[in-house]
Length: 357
Image (cartoon, helix red, strand yellow):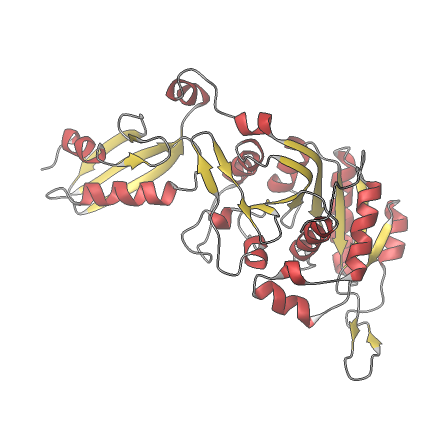
């Protein structure tokens, strides 16, 4: 029968690639239990957003499975306390160090409350348009359980970089910095089955533990709803404002109004309203068809007391480019005009230094 000492000895051969020490000496191995060939233990990481957590977990599992009489290994992931992190780094408090090094001038959340209206598309187009205008731009994908931002920007996938104290966002071909839970998963279709507190914690870490550097605009793609994820962003990040997205259906409008009430109750400015999927232009005749009914966005904006920034068409080209990870190459004059209005409406707006090469 294998002993706890033997399990810990096996795990002492597993290294944390960032810190260069084994996971036993780092104090990551907790609560080792053995029963009938089954070994269970907790692996306390420095951060649950660690980009190498799957590698560490896999190596730990393989190390224990190599022991005689071990038939299965059950690993629970946890996170070190702030005090443990401080001791680990020689007394320096690592939590939030990246946040202290970042200089993000504006944080703009894209929100609807309703699913399927194109929040991620609008977030991606806003980031692309701002970058095309010469601004330094990042995208924080706060949709932890349904992330789609990486698919739109990276045709061959991507991974964030790392350092001992910070996660480095992935960078697109035009220089947009992106952080998403899907950049940390082994497979893009791997499900993230987490409860609200864990989701909120990861969103906060995407702000405090990611080295965004100098940014003019950080665009935050919010998931549907008005619960944990949206609340975390509106409360934890220094918001410049929220861009609301709707579609022509009255059902979508009703849910968007709920989101608007949440934003207003949180005291965050609403920069304006964008209507997506407003119409389709027939390529054969050039005639405009309002497939989902007549637009109600101008009336909704007036009812909410916010600017109406514009309507976006149904365009098959955008679906093709998003599926191919090439949203940056979609030239939409209509959205460029919307982005320019966002720049003017965002508090403390500044002009870019120079367009990107």
